[in-house]
Image (cartoon, rainbow over the protein chains, first blue to last red):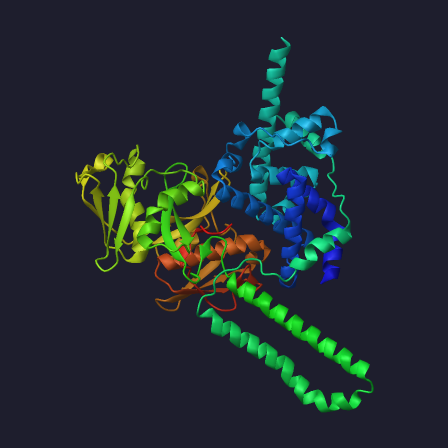
Amino acid sequence: MDYVFEELYEKYHQDLFQFVFYLTRDRTLTEDLVQEVYIRVMRSYNSFRGESSEKTWLFSIARNVTIDYFRAQKRKNNLVTQFFDWSKKGDFIPDHKPLPEEVAIKNEESQEMYAYLEKCTVDQRSVLILRFIQSLSIKETAAILGFSESKVKTTQHRGLKVLKTHIESDHLKGEAYDE
Amino acid sequence: MNKMDEEYIKKQLKNMPKVNDDRTKEEWIERVQPYKYKRERTRKKSPKMIPILSTVLLIGMMVLIIPTIIQEPSSVQEQTSSTHYDDHQVDQKANVDQQLKSAARNEEVTEHKEGEYVMFDLHGDEQVVYGGIFDQQVQYIIPLAFVSSEDHSLSELYTELDSYIDEFDLASKIPYFKDTAFSINMDEKNVTMHVPDDYSIGEGSAVQGKFEEMLSRIFYPYEIDQVLLESSNGSPVTLGKKGELDSITVHEPVNENYKLYDDETHDQRFMVPMNQEDKTFAEAIEDLKNDEQDYSIQNTIPQDVDVTVTCESEESCSIQFQDTVAELPEQDLIVAVESILMTAKSYGFDEVAFKGIPNDAIGSYNLSEPITVPLAVNPIYTNEE
């Protein structure tokens, strides 16, 4: 079974890691969740029937593991309810985590975009990450998220709109400050 | 949003930096290896599962051992060195280990026969508290099944209903069960709902109008006939426009089909029953192709997928899918199957046979045999971490 792990690792590990990282924004947590992804993969590889691509299957598991984690956290601690109140968290939760090095050394626009992504719902963020950061097609994204293709398009549109709203809002604030 | 804005944002997203993991493959192997065969989740076994699993294990062991016994004399003759024999033993042990691991994995699969939106069995000492919330526009009641294995009576668990709804941060909270307590009398088939003196069922005629339906939904599965209302000071209970009431009759839900409610705002999806009163089962299944975008209700069978319904008896029916179903992703098929199963349950069927789906195994379902209708829809396991 180890060859399965090695093959998946070689082909997809960095993309998988990046996907989970952009969802959670926490490197240590990402490591724990990716570990759980691999454990689930190893346990269930025999039942993988090849109907979807290996990559789609792997990323579906990653998405499920991450969502499971979010849900478990939500139940565990009502104090973090705001964090998981996916409709409101953007308004309530300031992101105190330091910027990851990769983002910190990029330009201001990338840093802003990283912050704005947090304002999206988990579904919206998943779609935006897969579509634009991971460069997957609508069809692949739909397969991973278990959405219809039209739902991917709608969620993508809504996510982009959220980003735009925050970009505009911050720019307006900036202009007011300058004046 | 104009096209230029959208393109700018897309470009910025595409320019986001790659985030790399700096651990080595060997470190990952070390992390993963110890957990490879560890059970993912421990759930108390249903008593009826134990004999089945034991039998499966026994048959597995016999399949392994019998050929070994039969072949033993020739094997011994062929052994020219003790090393060879040891290798044989090692191989055999590896085979047994593999078999046991495989059995353990099979057990896991059997144990986890849970749907996406439905549940089939209770395990061990689990009990179900049926609850409900509303969709965002208070058009539909979304039934929920809180599954608990806490050591409490059903009355105590129902008294926790409001805290369950609160704890799971479910959308569209309702005040129906706030500060209420329930005493369930199974022998008398009634429930006393103890409410505070200032009890209110919320503003709005829609919320008030669905109060009886909600109570019916949450107590009908336990064959309760009546809910007796009792305020703490003994005064009559006034329920909005309904005025003073001392009891509410529990009604059997009308025939319904189940579609998908997608609450984008809260990132929650549930199966929701839709009234199909006066419609036949076949019509209700056909109606699963229709969505109601205005209320975020999605169809569960795509428009272009043809289905034929044949009911062999009052207990059993079959759904024949046409060729177009082959193109559906597995996730969509699971949703279709589960919505059909719940619809069949509402119409009083016990099982459904699915035909024409190219793969017999989708999710945890084996479609080569009829599937029993689920116990409940939208399960939420209250004890899971």
